[in-house]
Structure formats: structure tokens, C-alpha cells
Length: 176
Image 1 (cartoon, one colour):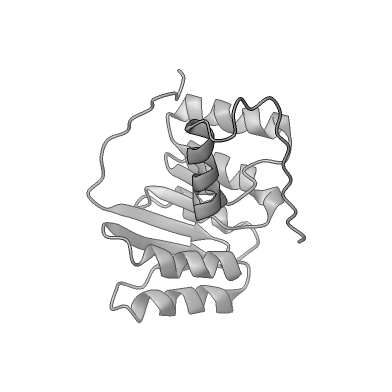
Image 2: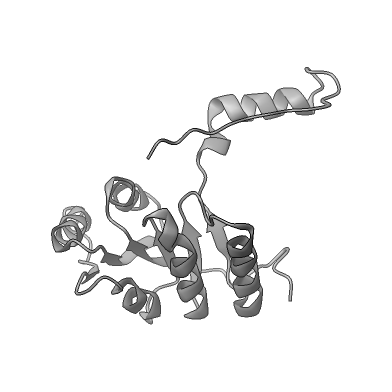
């Protein structure tokens, strides 16, 4: 069935596994620790030293050391299958976002992926179909939509400041 309006059981504590501990992923580990009701249960990266660094960030806050995954290139799949995870957060290279999210959802986890969630229309549909078949959420974490400029512009458009909008263009240059 459709996932439009999907509401899952509320969780008192959200147990998270983070895949990809480069700059964005490591920052995510730090940010997540400030959210009440969040527990980082597992961290994964192809570089063992990054896993150790993320574990240290968590334990330096007096919290339980998350399980580390870095034994092999696809060890992230084992993290996705871990029983005590509710949400898998993928901060991996773009080409892995769809595989990360689909394995997570097929393992009964909700998925959160950095931008872009997918690279093709077919991949977008794959995410929708897996989300619908598993009834798990899949969310692309785009933070720019919620910055001051974007929300101010949206508010101005909704309040008719620009008149009737007939056409708009935009671009996003992310030189990686």
C-alpha cells in the first residue's frame, strides 16, 4: 500500500545506525547526540579509524559505545540487519544511497539518506516501491530547504509578495 500518510508506532527511544563516517557522517554522529530520545547503537565506515573516532565521540558523552562495522566494504549490510536498530542513516557516497536505504528498509528499519537520495528516476521509484512494500519510512535529509533564506522566500511567495508566480528556475551546484 501507499506510504502517503504512513504513521508508524511511536518510539520512546530511536536507536540509530550511521553508515559513512566522513565529514558529514561524523558531524551527524555529534549532532544526533544532542537530540533527546536518540541512541546511536552502531557506526560503520570502510576505514576502521573513523569507526573508532565515532565511537569515541559517543563514549566521550558518557554513553554506551556503539557497535563498530568496518570488517569489509559491505559491512554496512550487517549494520542494517542488526536487530536493535530502528533507523539507518546513510552518509555514504551518492552511488550507495539507494542500496543503503533499500537494504535498511528490507531489514525492517526506517531509512534516512543524505542528498541525493537517488540519481535516476528509476532509483527514485525503487525507493518508493521498497518503502511501500515494507511500510518503512525513507527520508532524504535535505537541510537547505529549512534555512532562513528558503523559508523566508516560501513565506513571501505564500503571502503574495511576488504576485502570481508564472515561472521559476533554480540551480544547485555542489562541486564534489
